[in-house]
Length: 381
Ligand code: GLN
Image (tube, rainbow, N blue to C red; front, side):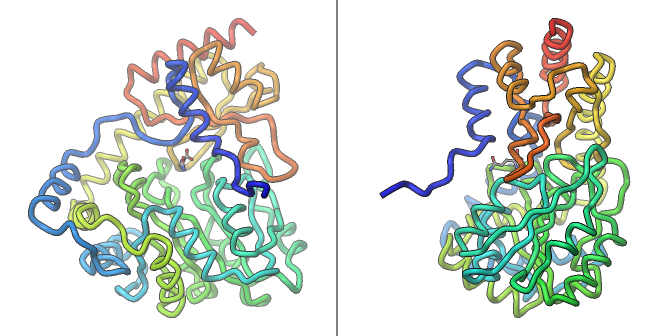
């Protein structure tokens, strides 16, 4: 029987290539910066003093309560424990949500560039994906294309704000327009908001859950890995109206059942850290972003504006490089020793090939070496 498994993700492929070649890894999004000691100490305490047995299936009430309090404080959302399901990372929250929402033959609209898990998850649930694309170079949301693609079989759409890979965000106005469409066509909206805590230019993060027309139809996916820079912990969650959250929990219980108990305790404690902690944490990441962006600009690369995420994208043609992102990424990792991610990997069809994604969450010395290598590569072309 043919193996229908999807091929290894571009993130895994690039990271393993970077390991093999000893390249500086600006590909897969994970921090190589000092890790928050408060969280490590909290996890150690939890291992020794809390529990190493199954937590409640939907997540520790203490963690679910902490998630509600965080969203009340940062986004003005009014949530209770019944709204929250803790999952093993944002990816599991996406999977459990799509398994709960999609029935065979349902059409689901995906917005390109898109995170690579969305399409296989929709298809595994029996759905049929329809695509619309953000418009480069500013990646405007294509409301007209969305209207045009919605048909009688369309049941929902998957959004992502801030967007991975390009870092742009959906405004309240765009979300309200999407809300009108969702009401008119009775659609659900699954919104990947894992980058909500990593916004650097002050743009307010608006969740579809905050838009009245979407409050009962939207699912918000969040991630402690991104908020607290602990990507290997795989603690995430889905937040939705109670009836929807119950359906998601029904899938979560047969995907992973529960999520590592001591890490849930540690994340619950981390949410009690003061707002100042988050400001300082964000400031270190903002400095890394500025270091990479300024260095790239000084070396002649054209860096596109991005509000959030751990990534910047460069416009290859405007940087004087061949507008073939896969080819440039291959050459960069092999010839210059810098791993990156081609933005075309975030497309299922009609890919944009002129942009490259670079992750900036690295120590200053690593960013500086990467910059020197990138500048030399560009100068030699
Ligand atoms: N979110 C990470 C990125 O965009 C990748 C996560 C993964 O490799 N599954 O780089």
